[in-house]
Image (tube, rainbow, N blue to C red):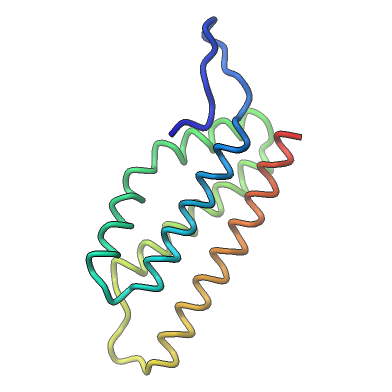
Length: 130
C-alpha cells in the first residue's frame, strides 16, 4: 500500500489521507489483536511478520508528512516508535512470574496507549488533508 502517489510528470501528489488513516488504523488493530492473543504464537508471529513488512510504508508516510508539517511528522514518528515498543513486548512475551492481574494490567496499558497515540496521529493526518 502506498500513502502517496506519483503523477505522470514525476511530481508527488498530496498524501492520500484516507489510505494513510486506514494504514495506521490497521496497523494498530493488528497489534491490539496480537496483544489480545499474546499466548498464541501463531497469531503473534503473523502480526509481527506483517509489522516487519510495513516499515517502508511507515517511512514513506513520515517522509511525506515531514515535507508538509514537522509537528505532524513527529506525531506519526511517535506512534511508529510506540508500535516498535509493542512489538518488542510481543517478541519478549509476558514474564511468567507475573500474576495474571499484572499481566492483564500491562496488556491493558499497552492497548490504551496504542489507541491514544493512534487517535492523535489520525487527527494530525486529517489536518494535513484539510
